[in-house]
Image (cartoon, rainbow, N blue to C red; front, side, top):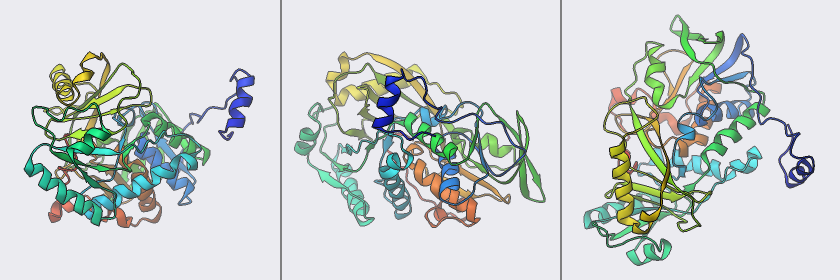
Length: 414
């Protein structure tokens, strides 16, 4: 596969860009793989990539029922950050952010990581006190975070209305937070995995598992049976349905989370902003669109669409803080199917079925966790030993009562 560079770009341009090799090729399923990954989104592709490049597992396949990145990876608001409260979450998400910081160079693919800062707003004295506690905890976890006054917020985000219905009393920022291009993450990981020998099999739906003696031995698919030494599942909002094929019940609730973008404008917002009280988050994309979202829908659903009421609520919340955006037109709207666990933290690692591994329960935090989710799950599958960073996120924690309640760090989403 050719190396992406300025020289190659100039050379191909002279030839009318007619001879670029495909970023990856669609493979025909083999009869056996050492590892089969169910799900061709960010987490599935990252797991396959790290298995092949970091942990020496060469015979790997990724099965995707649709197209690469066509699920939640292509239906989110691109935010990356690690400003979580509990040490277990902080360590995991900061590992992910550090991987993001070097991943473009590693993959030879521009992920458009923009560390413009992630700003959380407070609208009451109580919120300010909680925010100060969060800043202290985040800082003690070794992660960058600092409190901002209203004047400092106004200087950083000139368009913001500090005197909204709930006036802005302050906030805190993680300077290393920001956004990355979601499609580029999927495409870059697919290209990297393919280049390392991974078979990427699109339009291949899972129809069942082959399980014998409490151990998974393969999968049944719309393209035939495939035997496997290990199977990893990374299908986000459809995790419960896939797990049910293996008679495994997951404590997951699935619902739609909507987002939308306006028509593109010149750069006016160079910080990602979130307000839990006003119930919205907003950033500006590399294409100039204003990207906004808010809370999840209030009913369970597997549909990648939402309702008009949520659109109206999200837009009304945006205009409280940014009245000047009222002149913009919405260009498109979409929804992802988020999988929410009882403590709003992920479920990662082994299952009661030998050699069957699960990666789910991300809620709205899946995109920012893609590199670390892939790295830790690849380690766990390759070594058959749970990676230290995800020990606390096992499925059995719900039986032990050892929950990691990060609902507050999830902001407006749940």
